[in-house]
Image (cartoon, rainbow, N blue to C red):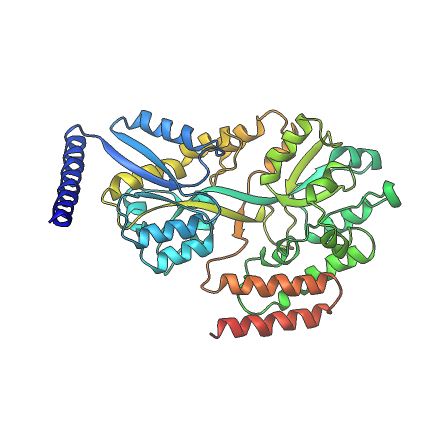
Length: 427
């Protein structure tokens, strides 16, 4: 009898809670306020969330945005779990990576945005070609709002000391190689390397996709041969540091740039804010630096580069899809891009106003060339949308390591990539 009474009491509490929630939602609707929940990560350390929300709510006083922090470590897994469980309370979703995006799309957890993009006249050409690369069967389920891309950082003092003109924003690979060789000097502790490649495979392999003819998930990798030949030749001639030494010593790319030991370094735009901060704190020997656009193959427009994106989408389970998309449109659009840029973060849209904002940040190089380097012509994703991207990545990393340490020839290494990736694609 006592057990039965407890069960009845629990049921009554549950129903009263549902009734109260329903009453609350009815009251909210009556007041004309729409509440949207935005799934994201790292609220405490991310500077652009609050400014974006405040700006949107100021323009739309009938909308309130609530942030749901799912943590950064397992964000996409947590998000997928909640959406797969039928959680309709999440309206706007942040998409952290391409494999996670692919999983959400496969499970029909994201809204197809095509109709909204058309009716709301969203200009997808502003995103440097990245929206084409994340379309699935012609359908877009996310719009980029953040993007980092690769540029060449260079040390002005090192160039001045050598009496060599600074690199410019239109370097072919041949010109880049020649300049790196020209800028190499000294021995031992006084050695200055002309260029630097971090130990990521992307620092070398992705030179090969900039002509738009190949991707890193095709299953055939012979197109990488000239780029491995260039880099290994530079390594043999002492133009760049030895890959094996960098790998075994776990040398961070920032250190070699900070201590004036490299003239040029290929790296992502995320390093801009870090470098400015380190100089401001007096933690680096570098004082004068600049940026230029990534080197490119003959016949390819200057400003063609590699990048990563963070996107926003709308949950398919949301009961407020129209309102959610309106917020997505704001954050991913030109106005949202300017707000993001003011926090020192690179947005997906890099129009003239955004470039002006970033370049006006204290510590950013004052020369026009560095400003121009922020304007990209075309961005290719480091890892494109593909069902087997994770498995392919393992092979590419392993064989890259073998080639760069001279444990396998370039031809044998590329043949190994071809064979192993084709087996993955055939599954």
